[in-house]
Image 1 (cartoon, protein in one colour):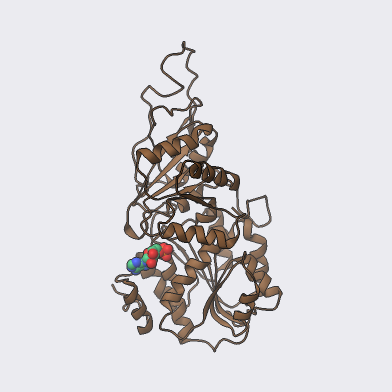
Image 2: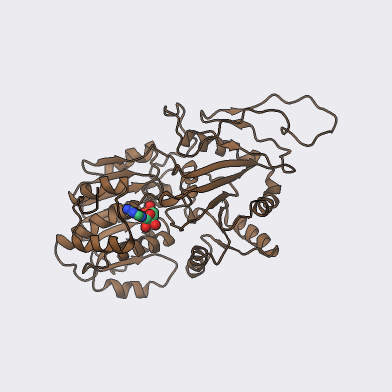
Amino acid sequence: MTFATLGLIEPLLRSLETLGYQTPTPVQAQAIPAVLAGRDLMAAAQTGTGKTAGFALPLLQLLAMEGPKVTANSVRALILVPTRELAEQVHEAVRQYAENLPLRTYAVYGGVSINPQMMKLRSGVDLLVATPGRLLDLFRQNALKFNQLQTLVLDEADRMLDLGFSEELANIYRALPKKRQTLLFSATFSDDIRLLAGQMLNDPLSIEVSPRNVAANTVKQWIVTVDKKRKPELFVHLMRKGKWKQVLVFAKTRNGVDALVEKLQGLGINADGIHGDKPQATRQRALDRFKASEVQILVATDVAARGLDIEDLPLVVNFDLPIVAEDYIHRIGRTGRAGSTGEAISLVCADEVNLLSAIEMLTRQTLKRQNEPDFEPEHRVPDTDASGQVVKKPKKPKKPKASGGGGGGGKRNLGKWVDSGEVAPAEPSIKPVRKVPVFNTGPRKRKP
Ligand code: AMP
């Protein structure tokens, strides 16, 4: 199969040739004809498998071939993304695909001055990539009109439909024309999000090109158990031992990011951090330098979990496990992209056992445990498996102090080694521990 057989027009085929794309990926093969045919879509595909081109190419074609010329302050297609960095990245891809088409494309997001964005929108934009907050600001200031809007795309759709964005999205929907094409793309879709999404779509086509809720099978994953307070020390130890070249590290909180970066820099390690409290220019610079391999270790909150495409990134480390199990799949999906291999290591302490269990249940795998000598935890992490069971072992009778710590020594059933793509046949019988993402209920962190 080629891009030409999918019905793409010559100017797009030329751009793809320049980019070196020869064969459509599975999600592209299914999505491109469906979008061209005007269908609504709910598409689930693993991270790093070419989703962006899956919606951007046919969208650009529709914009080039159909509909009226864009008028002042109008937008004809809108791609909503959860983070500013992703907005930049998606727009950069769109810009490359649209190289040979007479279309105006642009990206708007918060954290930078709104005035240049307002100026740019004056003459209208065919395809706009946006984060929801800034989009609403622009709309409320009359810098944007949606009467010409024909297609809406939610990239990382499950995150966009989750609680953090629900109010903003509800306000955006109210402003959009009812008659439009809607496309939802994500690597993960929980059952609740599926239900919610189904209500937003018109006779949608569901595309699922890989088993649900798994990361790319090119990512080898394991965990190292450790006491919480020793995580920084273990990280540095593993880094030196493994001679890590480039690592993306995820920490739970902004303070956690800053503390680890400070510690690493104090040891003379080339590290930088990104999180929601940092100015956008600083965030983007740190990311750009990391992508250019000028920074060795980038520590981030989940602001970097979604969609970012970092070429040849060999390793992701979860310094802390994510609160929401789906974010694990997105985090480790930063490596092993576009068919390359990668590794994902999680440092897990006893407090995190329920998070670990939820991840294993969601991804239907028992993560291999690898003990690091001298770092065996005093607070043992109970055994877990993909059924969601946390196996509480009976307390050992007290022994006089001898060979260190709790839980090391004996042979444990640690589960079999699995690559992330190796999936148990059945769906888990118990639902993952996860907040139910229904509009207007309960808190969810907004900006990581
Ligand atoms: P995405 O999942 O959209 O972030 O894409 C992951 C990476 O795969 C990006 O670097 C794309 O440029 C690349 N890519 C997407 N589609 C293709 C293709 N058909 N052939 C080769 N590379 C591709």
